[in-house]
Length: 532
Image (cartoon, rainbow, N blue to C red; front, side, top):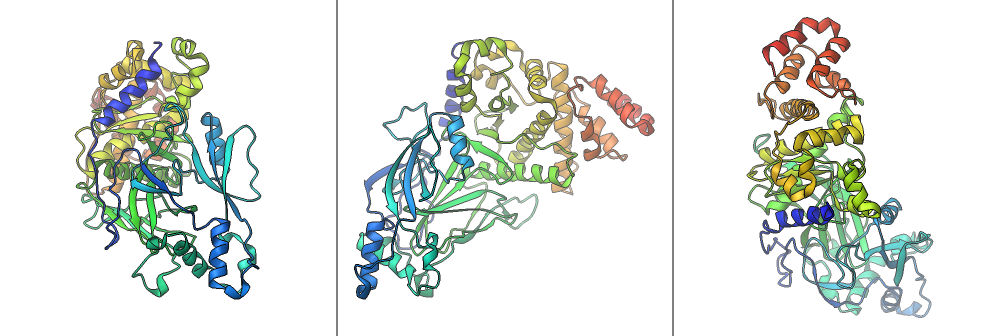
């Protein structure tokens, strides 16, 4: 038991390390021979570059563009380029709650090889690395969080005095790039005087069972930056985004898998909630792409899981609260070498707080262990199509919604009934020993019945021509609820049965009879027909 947390991390890392697809080279701007290759590994930094947006460099650029006003520059510091070193999850969450866009690598270095994450070599690997951000001059730095001010910056759009002042700040910005030796980064061939532009584009994915045309990657966050000038936006249901900040230079674009609905996918940097997929360098006009099952596997599956989650949360919203959404800050790890999926809800404290032997061994390390664990391990072994990954992901979201209704202690019993306490000797044993359909106990049968029924209904809504029925464990549970569904008791109506007193199928039967007495005959027929 002493090595549980270490085993947990080791198992997760081992499962993903074997899936490395190697180096990738995404299509970049034509003529950009210096485009760096992409990987899912750590970003490799080159030399530090002079920042065009520093107060010093923007002042020099202003004097060059407006020589008659030399020495009388109106430029004053609008922002600070800083870095934070959070010591734990609470401090990281505090910074996030302050609305900061945190980036795990310095913004003023050349990228030799782009990637999905970075960890400063001077910081221990099992702790947070430096988080870089740009904050306004009146920002109140939170007490107790270590930070360093790196540079005073000038971003003209943050200066109220620029409105109607007659100064071409876009040209001053371009001149700053030229004076600092970064002129090669200015977007070329985009016309309209080469900017400034508000980057926009569309991120889509092929779902051939739904439509022959690409569908949007929904509610995913996209980030772009040129040095310390950062912008983020969420895609809409069509996958379209538009930044609220203008640029004249080429930008680095990244997908950040923290969905606007409130869930995140992680694994490439265990301590951070959301995985990042580097897209590469594209012009200031924007970056558009279509993902399919022939694309990079990690990015493809992340986009599918993203859409499954978005669809589940939207179904919850459309139900008027009847269908339970997952808890806030749901964290999922998608593992390509794992055949089954398992919702431990460990990030929300299950096992770490409810399994006394483990809690006693970890002691004060419980908080650290909770930080490093997800809520769900989503197994994607054998998933080669959108449909296959979507189906498995929908099960995970349905189970997370079930958790919201029953709480930690109930879910603890579910895990025990699924795998037995012996499996807690190591997460590796647990992951390799749990298949999607295990149902050694009553709690597990309830979870399997509800989650499979839920994903069957939602799947059919998304794919109206399908008559697919998803079942696991003992056969019959899903069919019972579908039988009732088809006779008038729909998903949103049946969802009210989910509560902590529902611990086995006999109680489910009694609750059905109590809640819906008019359907007594139908309920009895369902249980008789699909006896489990």
